[in-house]
Image: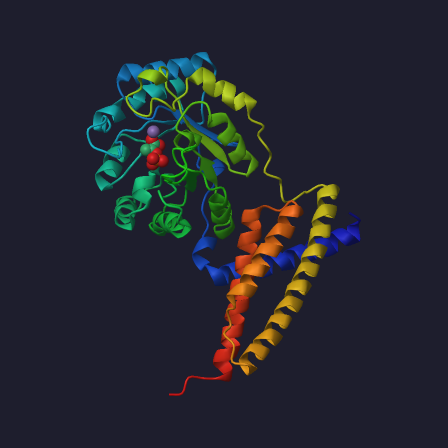
Length: 396
Ligand code: PEP
Ligand code: MN
């Protein structure tokens, strides 16, 4: 770009960003609060973060063996994970070793000298984790669903400087996920990240917890700079699918991976089917094509050209939408004059079916077409109903 163009481009960009910030501020001022990204947590972590370690701490020997195998394979993660308190779906299965296991984290520090993380589900867990100098905490999916529990954890963390990672809730509720991050932020925890571990879905047997890739993307849109780590182990629930899911997460721009790793997965006390050995973890990581999250500062000329073309198309798209809604308003006026209801089901059925078919012919997915049409139709009906309401106010 020439000097002059660059200047104009920068000025435009700055204006765009200002307007964007303003709108974002309007829509949700909480999410503009600063938080510190993983690279600024003080552990010297760069690029995609890798968190690995067993589902549960079982014995000191197990912890040592996992560490030694990681060392042998030269597969040292950025952060070592181990569950100490396990929220099991039904009682009777191994529910975690408890405080005893926190003492074994010294073994990890001794062999690997990396930060450790564990799950906390209540204030007592927080107190013990802090007492044993756990470096990073995570809140599990079963806890994120419960604002009382999340608030209790947040209150126990008031005044403490420790990074906290929030797993998505069991159900795909973005606000609940953001709400848990906000509860931490509002007690002063500013080292924050999210973890996408999929959502409970009893119908889809392909996954233990079905991923929903739009959810982390929405989260990143709503909370600028929020990093989302992917947990393919709990998404897939077996060893075989981990690589594919991890690669998809990276393709979607997620910021790291948490993968359950055990020296002897088959004999693990929890989640035996999904844990991998340090050797396999190394293989998985070497097979993943890690993409760069594009430095937004310096996109290449080619990318700039493509983005400019998109900007023009979006302008046209908005013009067409404006025209379409102006026709909708005219139809609304007609319906009003002739005392017709706003929603006409036959017409809607025809629009839906014919457009979806055309879209599919143009290589757009059926799901996307349906969502798009629903969205446009809903807005149309609302506009017409508003016209009707304004023209015939309810008599008081
Ligand atoms: C875990 O990481 O071991 C765990 C219990 O995860 P989740 O909260 O995602 O079920
Ligand atoms: Mn697990």
